[in-house]
Image 1: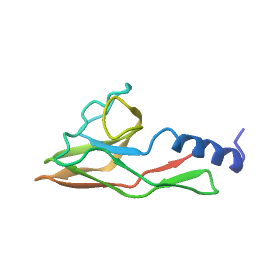
Image 2 (image 1 turned 90 degrees about the horizontal axis):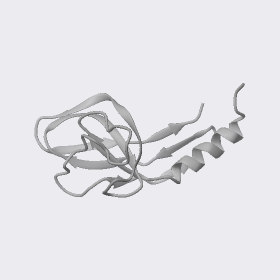
Image 3 (image 1 turned 60 degrees about the horizontal axis):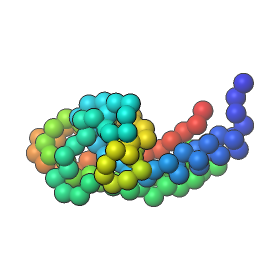
Length: 114
């Protein structure tokens, strides 16, 4: 049994209320509120997205730019604050991002309820 589109959208809209801050990790962040493997940002911290609700069971976020040191970044983390133990969810970056020197990683979040 599937959800109707209106219910999918309601769930997606509820999810975006959990948190708008995104960061990058060099490995899986784990299943705790403190993201493991999170970058030690070169300037700033996690960055907030501006969420947009759609009508198709999705919410999209504006691109966020996080400043990271050299390394290989394999995951992104969603949090409710710019710092601290506030992780809500995480996902794999595809493809992974390799920085040979300090630089910027752009993450454009999107949530789809199926």
